Image 1 (spheres, helix red, strand yellow):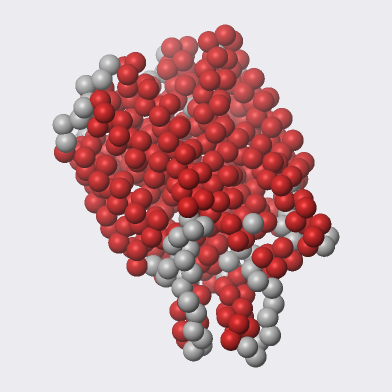
Image 2 (image 1 turned 135 degrees about the vertical axis):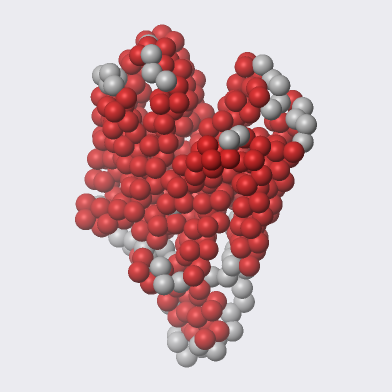
Amino acid sequence: MTTTTAGSKRWLIVLGTVIMQMGLGTIYTWSLFNAQLVSKFGWELSSVSITFSITSFALAFATLFAGKLQDRFGLRRLTAAAGIMLGLGLILSSQARSLPMLYLLAGVVVGYADGTAYITSLSNLIKWFPKNKGLISGVSVGAYGTGSLLFKYINGSLIDSAGVSNAFLYWGLMVMVMIVIGSMLVREAPVAVQVQAAGGPAAPSTAGGLRAAVSAASKDYTVKKMLRTKEAYLLFVVFFTACMSGLYLIGVVKDIGVQLAGLNIAAAANAVAMIAIFNTAGRLILGALSDRMSRLKLVSATLLVTAIAMLTLSYATLSYGLFFTCVAAITFCFGGNITVFPAIVGDFFGLANHSKNYGIVYQGFGIGALSGSFVAAFLGGFKPTFTVIGLLCILACILAASLKPPVQKQAREQGISLKPSRHTA
């Protein structure tokens, strides 16, 4: 397939990826099912809510192996199979009558399938648009957030009309169809697209050729080579902190509104819709903005805002307006960081092995999903947990501001003068 033909296919691939990501993002409606499952089966709320933590951890764990599976089976077959697996996990959850069965089906199976399709379709789309990694990542990850917002109303209606168990059945069927249809529209990005977009090959005898050679070398980072750089571990720390701050807040926002801001249950529930809106807005706005400025400086700024909001929740007397301002700020920044980080990993370690490399860094999401709850259990409350997360965000802010991509160090070692990229400097 020629480069011209490849370019003409890109927007169809965007459509397919968006459809898939919307289906995958529906798992973030899980909180709608907690109280209904407790009411039907008499389980403890805390036990039921663990399901989503298992889903999040399985999602992140799946990204470690998704790249290798894509190499073996191809993107279309892998994402279609993941869609079928995810749908079946939800459909079979409609028959679950015990917590272990719910953990296995709605937790492990659904999470693993979701993570497999998420990372591979996202990485593939970024490869099609290497000059606009931030914007296109925002489109893909924004679709993921939009799916959760849309299905908040669809799944809520299904629960009310058909009951919680049947809602799993219909949800699974719809998601399976969406992901399979989306998988039929995608096509793996050929290497020619990436090379041309990066500026094409240049003669090695020129300064431009030397810069191109170093730039090309940055695309050769395998997982093993990436793990030999300190930047990989520092990016993991920053990403982990960004994820823990957002995921912890999302999981307890209604309780915070009631206990710390003195809101009634109905008013506090409005925060759930606000999270979906600002989370999606952050993905779209900050993703596009990251193509016009340093991505790391942008992440550093979002972490500073998150730290201020977290410390405000911990120490300030919360009014209705201040509570919702903090929630909006944290979720906006969280959504943006989730979007910008795939592009940062591409900037640092290239696109050739992006799904595998980002899969390593993405473990910060799964560990972050669990860590906030563990910190809260250890410290015994919301306020000290917010303080710890706020301080971690300040540390991560400093790290993000000081990080440089390995390609710049490689250039200096070879005596090549490279101007820092506005995306990574």
